[in-house]
Length: 217
Image (cartoon, rainbow, N blue to C red; front, side, top):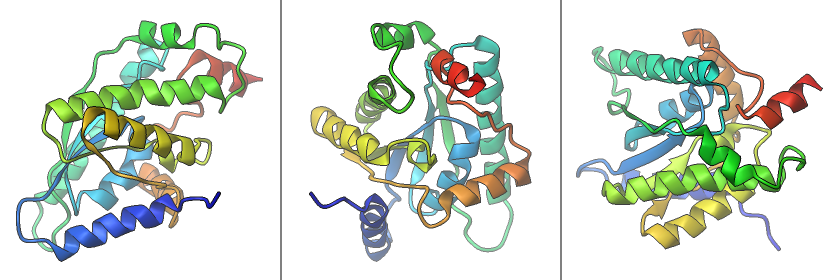
């Protein structure tokens, strides 16, 4: 089976948007896992879409950690929007933010029976589905043109599986999925540069208790 180049698929869509430019910009409901991962994605896509960032991460199992990460997301978006007010070349459309409910119980319910799964396995796949399903549902209800996630920027995340889940949810909810592999074209490298520029807190685990334990060895 041929492997899909999701970055190339994304570029086809973006090129099509450029060719038909002139009307209102399409809308994108973008799930964000954290500010550092979203930094490059927002810089990249805000020139093509009116983006609403949906911060929904019940996998973050400790409330102080959750609050720290969501505060960084808000700070980054505020900084981006302030920069876009400056004169000169077009820097992208303003970015909105919706914070989802913080419900770690939903993650633990989803993970029941999968506690011993290794990182990157079935438990992670179901976590992708949990967060993307909420994104697709809300995006469809809000009448957005596309939904997507920043998760594919991480070298530790399975981009193929994330895109397969997104495509299945697109069919289920009736909203277009924006394919991606944001780590390509030095996207991950750029996210590190932007994190340094804005002084963003970069966590070393995804947020769940299982990934934290794996990091700590």
